[in-house]
Length: 177
Image 1 (cartoon, one colour):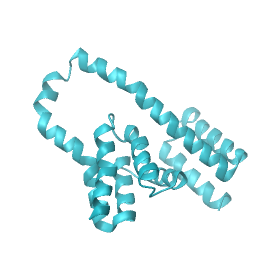
Image 2: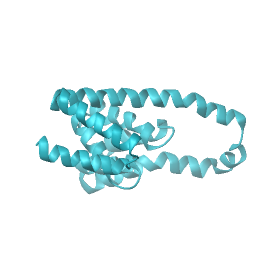
Image 3: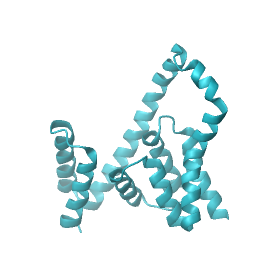
Image 4: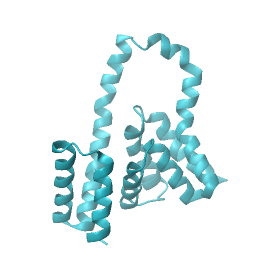
């Protein structure tokens, strides 16, 4: 039962604090599962993130389901997914009328503009940690090649990120195994 409680907290807290959805909660989830509970290493977390990004649907719930299952079986997966969606569910039910009333408020819009830089910094820190881990695990040239290829495919050729992730997984399976 203690494990289920830890799984719940590991995904409920990022669900509360992760303003902006899955991408903004990923660094918070990483902090919980890597730093606080030591369930995964940074490398393992990046692999779970890559796998989750290659599948359809919200990233946070997929990660919660996978990590919850790894740590607590089927019940752990259920607890992790529930903990991820519970903050939004609770707030939506409790505050639906207020959200509807103030959705066009200039103060609310201004508040969201102030939150965005913090989210950008958290994502940048996480990206740096992944880049550092990649450099240490597969080397400088492989890392530079994958970064450059990903940039060109997504930004210049407008290839969907899911295909780039799938291609990177294939590349890793063939050349880095």
